[in-house]
Structure formats: structure tokens, C-alpha cells
Length: 267
Picture 1 (cartoon, one colour):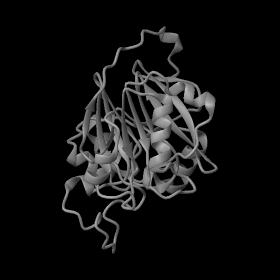
Picture 2: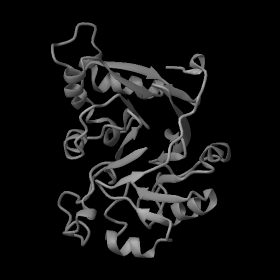
Picture 3: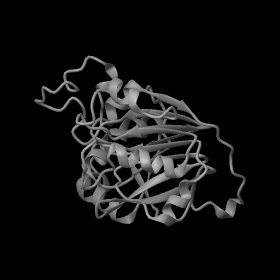
Picture 4: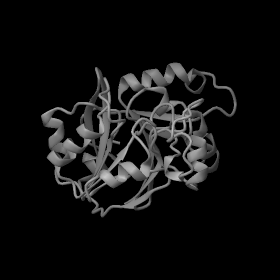
């Protein structure tokens, strides 16, 4: 499995408009963060988790030329606003783009992109096929995906586990039963917004404590704000198996296909 970090920033991105802090003025490319998203290449399957406002730019920068499906974590704009830009994949691949999300997220997408779900569509709008999901593991072209529920203050958000890789963003609480889904990981991606306490995101200290509890072989921190600090300085503080992710970072994760009965595939 190849994991490409398309964006590692929080909702405002980094640099923040109008900000003159050291991070926003930094010339280090690792301090330039688009909104959080990842691209997963699992064998021949190409997946994206979240289509934020920077989706078009991210697809071009990562040279993603084929996309099989989009998984959504939740309905906030910094994770959905770029959905319209799946259109080139519609045109090139000649089919609807499958979207996997919880029913309430799908309803939000239908409101925000009503023209794409209209009964009589305007020519050229995104062609989408929705797949409601919840807690139950599901399959996309034989790849098993395990949803992991986390809390973003009072909003339920889905993380995802594929093989021994898991991606968790926009969280500040994970229930004990959901933590069990995150045991035995080779790679955990986890949000760490800043150092100061936040109402709906893990702080750096909280993220490191959770990583210590879950004991993945490697961990990468994402959904980072300019308030966390300069990449090179924060990185120097971290344990050896924990790294700050940055835009464009590629990580390889061993993946063994799970041989399940075809009848168990929910999609």
C-alpha cells in the first residue's frame, strides 16, 4: 500500500491568510499545508479520503490519474468542498464516482451539491454514486475497509482502517471499543492540531499519549495548524517512531489482501 499525504493542514491551511507568524512566513516546504486528505494506492485500487477545497490542486500535484472511489470522514467544508472536481475522473473513466459516507454526510453533500443530485442534471455536472456506510466493514473491489468512529467534540466522524494502516482526523475522543480497532497497526495517522487545548481536536500531547497507548509501529501526525510550530522544531521533539506528516510525503505500508467470500462484500 502506498499512502500519499495530499494535505496535512487544518481548516484554514498553512500559511493562514493575513498571518505573519514564523510558521506562516517559513520558507520550509514542509510548513506549507493544504487541507487534510490522503491518497491510498492499494494494489490496483486508487482511493482518496476527503475532497477538501484544495482537491484539484492535490490531484494535479500528486499526479493522480485514476480514482476508483472517495471515502468521507465527515461533512465539514474543509473535507468536502472540492467534490465538484471529480468531474475529470468522470470524463476520463466514463463512469460515476462512488462516494462512501454515513447517511447524514450524504444528505449534507446533496444539499451543498444539489445540482449534482438533481433529477434533471445540467450537462457536465459531477456524476456520483453514493454508498451509505456506518460501523460495518465494507469492501471496495475486494479491499476490506473498517470504519472507526471517533468524536469531533459532539460530531461523530469516521476514521478508516485498511490492513494494518489507519487514518484518523478531526478527533478528540475515541471510545474504548473503537480503540480496539486500532490495535496491531503498522502505521497510524492521527490529528494533532496544536499544543494548547482545543474543543474538538487532539493536542500534540494528547495525540502522543494515544499513540503510546495504541503502540503502532509508526505514527504520523496530520491536521496541523500554524499554532503547533515550525515543522523542523516540532519534529525534533518527537519519539523516534512518530513523525509530522507533510504535504507530498509518501509512506509504504505492507498489505496482505484478505480472502473473504464474495458474498460478504457489501459493495
